Length: 156
Image (cartoon, rainbow, N blue to C red; front, side, top):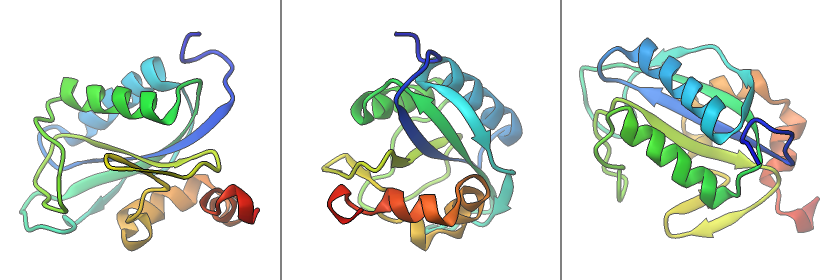
C-alpha cells in the first residue's frame, strides 16, 4: 500500500533542526514524510528555541506534525531515521548526549499504542519535559486526545 493511501494509524511527530538552512531542512523533511511515511494532515507553527540538554550557539526550529500512516511503529522509525540520514544527520543522540543536528524526527505518539523497546519508546518518554515539543504539539492535538493517546489501552 502506498504511504498516502487511506490508512488506519495516526501518529504525531516532532521535528527539529539547528544546523544549516533550517527552514529548508524542515520543508524537505515534510516532503519526505508526506511521500514516504504517510499523509501529513496537520502541521503546527514553527517555533525557535534554545538547545535542550546541551550548549550550542545554534538555536533550534521546532514543529509538530500529525500523519495518517499505514506503517507500523517500527517501519515508521526506520523511515524517519532514513529521512534524517538523507537530510544530513550522521548519528542519533544516545544516552541523553545531545549535539547540533541538521534534522531530528521523533515519534511522539502512535494511536493509543505503548511501545517500550531499547530503541523505540512510544509515547516519547521525555516529551512532557520539553516545551519545544509540547507547545507545537498542543497546536495540533486536543488536550483530551493527547491524554487518551498517552494512557495504556487498559486504562481507557
